[in-house]
Amino acid sequence: MHGRTCQHFCLPQPTIVDQPNILYNVEQERQYGQEAFSKLNQEQTLIVEEVLSSVRNESPNCYFIDEPGGSGETFIYTALCHILRGENKVVLPVAWTGIAANLLPGGRTSHALFKLPVPILDTSVSSMRPNSKEAQLLRKTDLFIWDEVSMVPKDAINIVDKLFKDITNVNLPFGGKIFVFGGDFRQVLPVVRHATRTSIIENCIKRSPLWSKVKIRRLVQNMRANNDPEFKNWLLKLGNGDLEIQHEISEDTIKIPRQYYADYDNLIAKVYGTNEINDSNISKFYSTAILCPKNDECSTFNEYIVSKLLPGDIKIYLSCDTVEKNESYDAQCYPTEFLNSLNPSGLPPHKLILKKNTIVMLIRNLNAKEGLINGARMVVSHLGENAITVKLIDSGKIAIIPRVKLTPSDPTVPFQMTRKQFPLKVAFAMTINKAQGQTFDKAGLYLPSPVFSHGQLYVAFSRVRRFEDITFSAQATFKQKIENEFIFTSNIVFKEVL
Image (tube, rainbow, N blue to C red; front, side, top):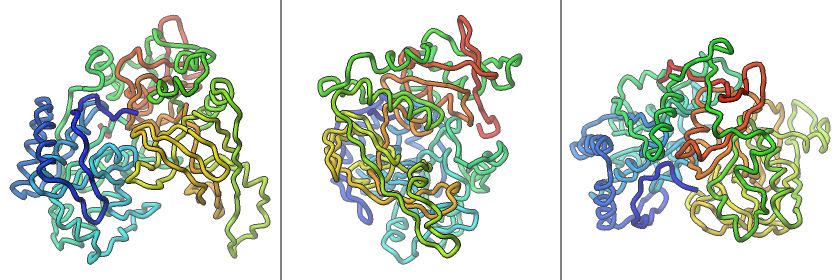
């Protein structure tokens, strides 16, 4: 799996040791920083120089880098980390998801670094104590980089602001610390179950009083799609909601050229081919995926690919599901068969069907330093009775995945359920939301019905570098039409947040 931009340099990454201390070779970091700075384009250079000036002059500032997908924002963060660490300054990069955090040098998730609660409410506070080692580290940090803030609810940013004011005793935004926020509000916003458009927008960090204190800096040049200017311009119009609306169908319907369309039966063949997937060719599919709006649609593709394209015998792993005892109900009221039939958000399936060379996704953080984070893709190399051996696609590291106990955070489950299972899902196909932050050499997009939330269509198409790298399929519905030259489908854009 690739990072989010094709811009890179070839020096090895330094060794980063986790909290409370981050250890590195200052001279080596200085070398990395010089190399990275020399590869910045003009608009990236201006942003980096402005942030460096704030840090060196200890001038409290908060910046937001508006970064259309593929514009090289991760490269900016990497350059800042290496340059400032080369000056013996402390930089802490964080991101909302583990996948994005793993792309940053020494990156961690926002929940881990700031001790954010789950769930986050408007009354929530950080669990960090002001006299703890973690708080001491935050106090001495010179720069915080926070990626994917478009997905961060405003209550989370308010919790962090209060945390910093408490531990620094400074009544300035974020305790006077320098923050660089990054994100793309054209992409998926904070997830709010069954929420209205108004509720989702109100939950966005742009609705926090702190947002008025943030300086906006914009990246325009798309580094990922640089070799296809037509696709690059079309993507930006898609994300901004500027494509021509087909009002005769719906108020949010657009038309997509049918040049790279495939019907449902041919979509898998276009993306994964028709030959079997084995030891000799599995690496070709490391940067390949089919994207769907919902989990159920992904499951259909995954089951087909495992059964038809992977040779060998299947291995079935069944979960052990239990209900925690509680005075308000009788656990005996929920038979095992009923628990097995449930598929709450964030849990692996009761029946996990795998073969060797199955591409899977980890759905729980196990070991962040080793890359075993929620959303990491890996390929199965050995199926044991009590452990599964995998190879991480990003790093090539070998890891052993154990069975673990998982409890869903899905509020639709009205009781405390525990599922003991391998924290894996088959990932030849994945949801559009889960693909955010990743780049594919080849992708498929399946729309049995239109996308249902802001930015989903933009996220799906911006996972690739060229129009020809994505094959899409759709089914005709009352809001989707398939004609000779175009596909008509919904593109949901909340322009209030752009």
